[in-house]
Image (tube, rainbow, N blue to C red; front, side, top):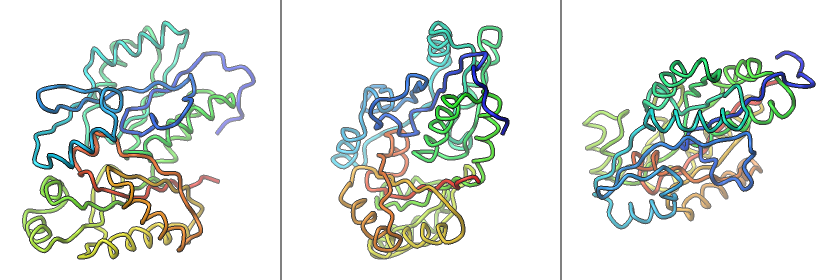
Length: 292
């Protein structure tokens, strides 16, 4: 990365998609804007994390596990309105960090609007390849570097270098949502549901893979901890905790991780849009490699 500029010639804002769990941070930097995805429940459409907070969403999921819930990317009109708001605030560049384009069409919508508005504002788009707070980390890094005086293009170059070192390991404890997961074939889903098995999954570069599968919750949590501990043994990493509607289950995981590694990571709720697909009892650990 080039040396920071003393006075950035163009003011740059950062836009993060709502799935990055950044609403939970108090006093968000005024450089940072949130682009909301949508969640559809009971005939109504909610803005992810704004109209529907994770706590209320997961309570609804727990009370009605078979309820119809679906999600959708932000509309072109919503993206265009946000970009105009940023342009009117005096910014001339935007860095947009999105959840993986392999699981959402949000990045495609952003690209289309950015092309349409290219004369009004220059937009850099980073498909992070991940989700949840691992995704949010990219936006936080962008804000930090812009505040230090780095040019937008150099910040984006740094974010691209972060992508190979970002992953999430998590467990799913809901039978109803187990059936919806895209990475398990029909036989695996049937057997796991029949035997009440709880898969440990990895989300990396926009794709799911199965790390482990256990009969007891304790086995599942220990597998998550071991995965994080193994990453720590290999290189310096930043860890974050993530949880759905079962905070007690996450606290159990965090305590096991602390006993194993001495680390108690900051925890962030999984946004309703992500939770709609993995269930109210999902817990996990996100890791981001620390670049030297």
